[in-house]
Length: 137
Image 1: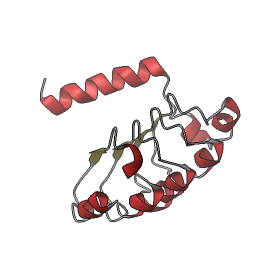
Image 2: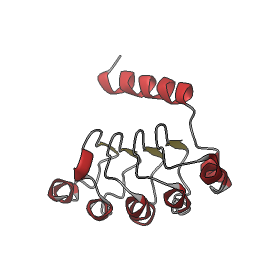
Image 3: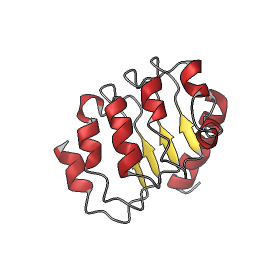
Image 4: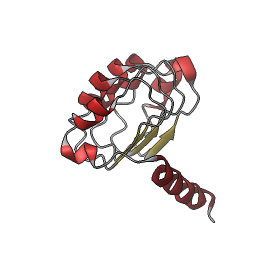
């Protein structure tokens, strides 16, 4: 949580990859990211302690997110998905391996978010393109 607080001054940060931060990423910690108004892409892959409270913090604190990656976040449930309603700019959402999310939860999403949910193949394709762009290929 302390490490995320240190990022709060990086106002022009547009992408943040917290993959594998395990128990260190909580809803409380994500409130510290609220000053990052330029943040568009957030990867929380394998943040196994990330919960529905964190989803609420995201939705309220980072309304400009366009891409949210939640691969293998087992504590996310249908309730957490419902909290994403304020993320009207979201156009990519990956929920692969989120065992607490069911088809019922996905169907309850607002239409603009439901259309953003990526299937595995499409997600992998987009991530490969993004990585190539980052490393200059």
